[in-house]
Length: 480
Image (cartoon, rainbow, N blue to C red; front, side):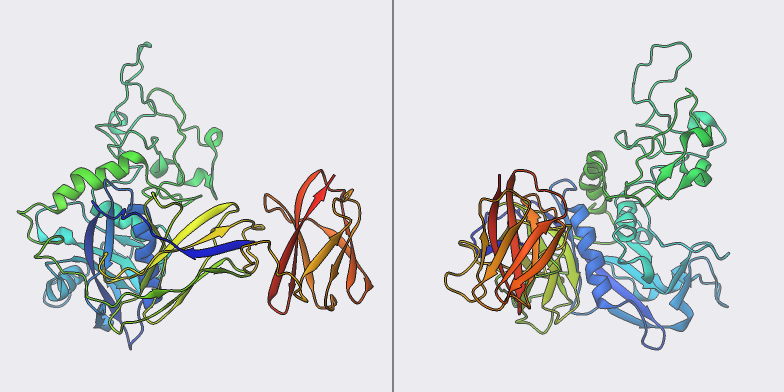
C-alpha cells in the first residue's frame, strides 16, 4: 500500500452530540470476568452505530475503573431465580450495585431471563421513569461481537425487534408487508407498519418467529416457507438489521430507527421526572484524563497502524475514532484496554484519506488527542502493505530502490532490478484498484528478476511493490 500521513486541523464536529455515562459492573468468579479490552471495544462499536442517532449519541465509561463484583452466585445470572429470601438475581444486583447517575450495564458469564434455563445474549428495558428500566444485562461472550450490545442499547432507547408480534395468533395484529397506506385493490389491507410490529416503517416486515427453520445461514427460503401475510405478500426481511435476529451482513440501524433513538426515546431517557439521571450536571461526569499524544499513522502488512503515547494513569481504556474528511463526523472503529497504545485499522480502502484521533474511554471531548491523517493510495484484498514515502514512492539512490523495464511494457514479461541484492526481496503486483496480479518470477542475476504474469495484463497502470528487510518501495508500470 502507498500512503502519506500528516497532522491536520479539523472542524469541531462534536457539537450537538449527547454523551451518556455507562457504569460497567463486571461480575467475577475467582477474579475471572469480562476483559477490559472487550469492554472498551464493545462500547466503541456501539458508539459507531449510535453516532447518527439524532444529533449523535455517544457513551463513555463512568469512573476510573469498572465496578468489579466478586460473587460466584451471580456469575451465572438468572434474572428470575430467587434466593432463600425471595429476592431474584435482578433485584439483588440492581438493588446493591445500581447507580442512579449513569446507565448500568452488567456483564456476566451467563445470562438467563426467566428462572427456567433460557440462555440469552442480554436484555434491556424500554424507557420508563422508574429506575428498573435503567439497567442492561449482558453475557460476556457476546459483549464484543459487534451486534449484541448495540442491540440491547437499541432496546434501551425504545427499539423493538423487527419481528415483534410476528407470531401473534391473530393475523391482523402482525405487521404486513405493504407500505402503501391506501391500498385500492379488493380485500387488500393497507400498511400498518406505524401501529404494528416494531412501529418502524423503513424496516421491512419480519416473520422470524414463524419461519426460523427456513433460514439457512443468511438465506431465507421464501418458496419453501410458504409464509405470507394476510395480503398474501411474501416477506423480504432485513437480515442485517441490528434489531433482527439474523445477524447477517454489515449490521445497521435504519434512518427511522436512528430518528427514534435520537428523538423521542432520548427525550424519554432525559425526562426530569425519571428516578435516574444520565445526562447533565447531576449525572456521572467524564473523568479528567491527560490527553494521549497521537503519533504519525503508518501502514504495515495488516492495515493502517495507529499508535499513541499514554500520558495518563486514570483512563479506563481508549477509543480509536476515524473520519473520512475534515467536514464529516468521527466514528469509533475500536477500543483497547488501559495502557494499550497500538491499534490496527484493517478496514481501509484505496484512494481514501483517513483522519484519526484517540479518546480515553472515560471522557467525552475533554481529553481528545490531536487529529492526524493518512492517505491510503492502494490496498490488496483488505491487506495493506507497509508505509511508503509520500513523494515518488521510493527514495532516490537508495539501495532498496527498484527499477522496472521495459516501461511501458507489453504486459507479457518485464524485469525488476534493484540497486542492492534482490534475492531476499519479495515482489507483488497490484492493479490501481488494489487487485493482486498472479505472476511467475525467475532470477536473472543477483540484482534482477523477470516477471511473467500468468495472464497477459490488460492496458493500464500497475504498481510493482517490493519489500526487503522491512523496507517497502513501489514503482508504477504502464502496460500498453
